[in-house]
Length: 291
Image 1 (cartoon, rainbow, N blue to C red):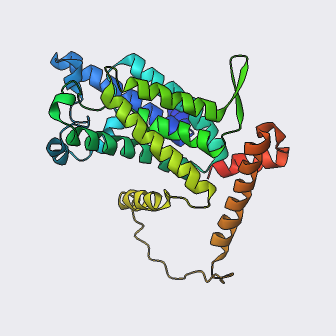
Image 2: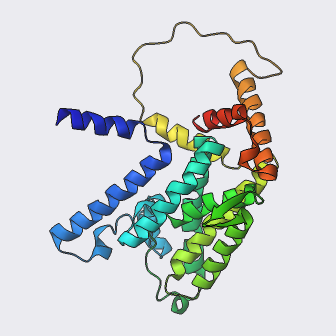
Image 3: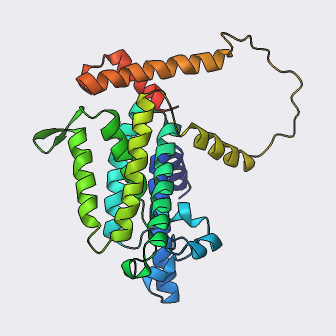
């Protein structure tokens, strides 16, 4: 039993960031099922404290829901659909881009989907939103990652069964399907999808111009995470003196060079496909994606 526990802990330790997000979604889903079963309440009420409410005043009372709704699913098909797509898209993301940047896109997609949902359903007449309930699901974040890839390297080809199609075709299909869905029963979800889609597209187009619009969000999340890190009781006596190079220290200069090399490799993939990379370039890209 001890060996099994150790194996589980070891496997969890080596999960990448998106595999941990997938695991968190599964845990929340089964928590909702357990609450529903024990308390004998409707499944839609089991995780009400995590849902994003439609009314802005209800949202003010539970502001955390702008993020937690993205971890909340009630239907097993909804859960599996989102997590299967997230798994395959995230594999491409962490191999091509730094993990922190990929996380920024995902969580900014969740935020953008939630914000657009709140804006739309607090601006349109109540009669037009009467069928819309609280928002749940990771779809906005998944859409952000998908559309980011489609916009960043639109001419890269992928296989759909035996057919080779370009990524921009997939992106266009996603937008069309979501637009049609606005006239269906899941209007709120489709509005959130568009929030993620807009974020993913803007992020990609700005990154192609050399601007990482998620960098500030990443620093903010780092500062939040640092609040929960245990501080060492030992005081630092000696500080390492690093000579600046062109106004930057060595680490900043190396990081800049590495990012430029990643950008060149990604540009090569966009033009000629992943298969055109040398073994050295593939190895460098894989290593950069782990940072």
